[in-house]
Image (cartoon, rainbow, N blue to C red):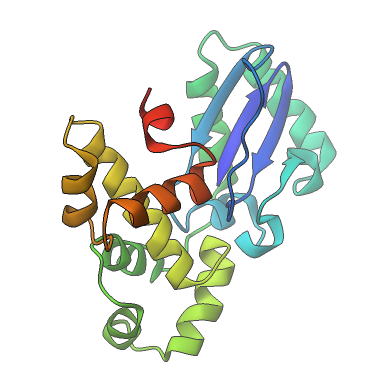
Length: 192
């Protein structure tokens, strides 16, 4: 989930299950703050699943008067990124304590069944907690985190076949399909 400032307005970007690709260069000024998995719902006070695949004005989730005050602060700041961090810090909220452990384990490629067992939940309970915290189930989160690991390796210049093998994809074609499905563009374009 992200907190975004765009041309004087504050927006929330919910967790995505598909690519949101804009055509051409983005117009206007932008600044954003991306939250680690599971943190956004604590900041915004809304289950992640309610914002899945959405972009909404911040005043759709917080009181309008508060958003006007915070928007004025960000608009008047020379460093809008730092101002967004202050907005998030002002929000308070505590993430579900299992979020970090679940995201870390899934990010290392551990199977969902093992992660559920390790955190003391059934797979069904883990799925419900994941929907609230991440916006989608643990298998989708694992897929997104695997793609992030693959992209980090690909950015070092490793060949796609090596990246696929090192990050748990069946083969280079599997990596290519996931990149296209989750990022909306081929790997080469995404890295370019």
